Amino acid sequence: DMWLCIDNKIKTWNPLTNDITEKFELYANGMEYVGSYLYILQNELIFKCQISPTFQVVQTYYINDPNLNFWGNGGITYDGAHFWIVGQDNDTYQFSLYKLSF
Image (cartoon, rainbow, N blue to C red; front, side):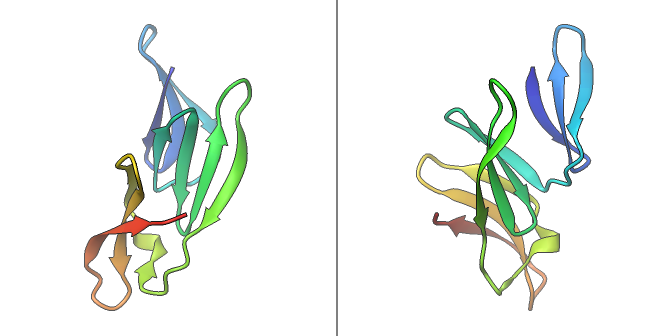
């Protein structure tokens, strides 16, 4: 199955049956799969999750940036060295790409 973030919910899609299944109740701004882990962005938190053999959060990262409006985050990606999020500046309300270090 493929993991998806649709309407801020985590779901899986089975391409053989075309079934989409909601996995659990968790509001999410986005997610990224890196190595064998699924990283889920939720406001100012990033959850590092294993998905096999059972789903569980193995580590949580806190994004501590007073310039970001975490209700306006819009996604997460990884470039091979750093994670990046799209965040909204508290003062200008402009969206920007922010590099994370953790």
